[in-house]
Length: 221
Image 1: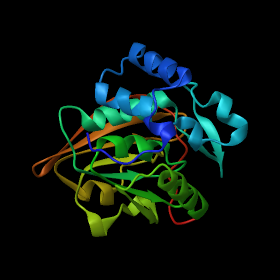
Image 2: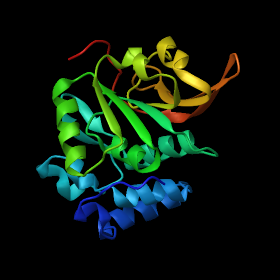
Image 3: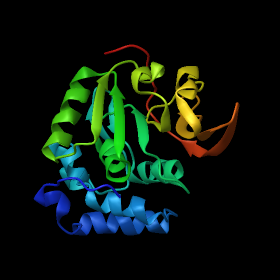
Image 4: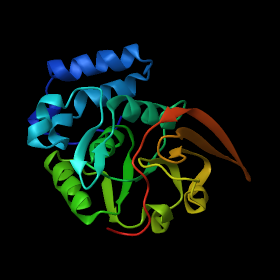
C-alpha cells in the first residue's frame, strides 16, 4: 500500500465509530483487508457537514448539498473491493469527486488517482479537504465526467459514483487492456452495479446487484 503523510486524525487508531463501521462491513461480506484498512483510516466525519458529523459512521448515504450525497460506506467498500480484486491497479480514474470520501479511500490503495467533478464548488471543497489530510497522489479535474479524462488515459481502473442510463463509450475507450470499470447503470429506482472488463478487443460485463445513485449529468455545473 502506498504511504503518504497523514494528519494526526488519520494516523491514529480507528475511532469506536470507525471500528463499528468496519465490523459491520465485514459482516456484510467485505473481505478485502486492504479495503477495510482504508475505511478504518479515512476519517469520514471530515467529509460531511457539521450537522451530520454524529452520523458519519452510520452505514448510510448522507446529503452533501447540490442534490448530491456521500455514498453509503458499504457501497464505497464494495465498489473499491471489486475494482481491486486480484490485482494492483496503478492508475484509477474516479468520475464524480463529490465529497472526496471515495477519492480518499482510493488514494489509500492506489498509487495515482485522477478524479473528475462537474460541480466546481464540490470539486474545490474536496480538493481543500484532501489537501488538509495531506494526500499527494490525487489529480483533480473540473469537467464533464461523461467524457472521462482523456489526456491521462488509459486507466487501469475507472470507478463511477453516479448512475447513467448506458455505459459511456468514452469511459470504455479509456480503459487500459485488462482494465476494469465499476459503474451504476440504469434509471433511478432501477439501477444495477456493473463490472466492465476490457479483455483484448472485447468487453466482459457482469451485474453486481441493485444500487441507488444520483444521476450522472452531462456538462459542468
